Image (cartoon, rainbow, N blue to C red; front, side, top):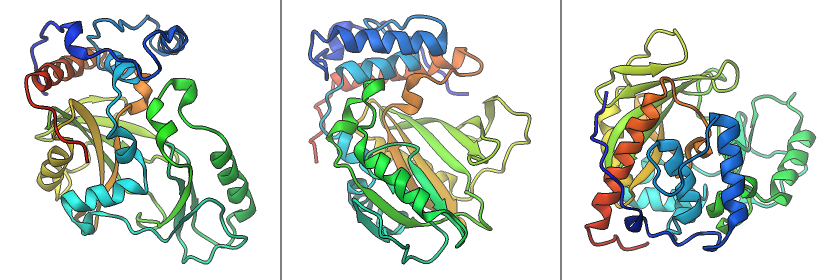
Length: 299
């Protein structure tokens, strides 16, 4: 289990230039209410200590112009290919703003929005309701994403759709490996199981020792490419105080999923809750360390 001391955080080091405007009290109020709803306590936005509080602080004050591009499911592919190589990237079969009347792509495939999270539809057989998928995709296109949770970066991503080949096996989604990277160093890996049915997750340290889980499932074996994934996550996380980098393993080889700067919008409780403080201490240390270094150049 990763450990870190909890350094005192200097609020002045957090560069509080609000992404919503320095006097946006409504954003603070919305964030406080949603956080209270999920965590049953108010967040400390002035001196965050918990990981989930740091996510709220980032929404308000982190105006890093790199965040939209790395979160854009189309633009990110070129950025990641440049850093890791093209073989890490799932190919794009199509991108645009309006799905065709009939799907011309070989099944199975997945339709996604480029500008949001959890906006996807899987097409596995001719019996899948394509008109319904077209309708829901139009909803994705016409509704702004992230606003009600004050996730400002999504407003700067062009709205659009993309189609990718399905990368699971026998119609099932692959395990999702989510690497928590603080200051360019992987601290832990969250493994998500059965995301379409009985979704659950486990938390492992970088040596594949489980230290948190909401399920009694046996530990899945470490992926064959774990060391390669860790190195790749640290490459992508360099220059950020925190980012979550997601990978899959397909036929023993790693595949990039996405980079996430607001995991769960900071609204998903950790079990046990001490992990929230532990990860918050790692974020605080990474942020203080970054203040003492020359800021990275933006792409």
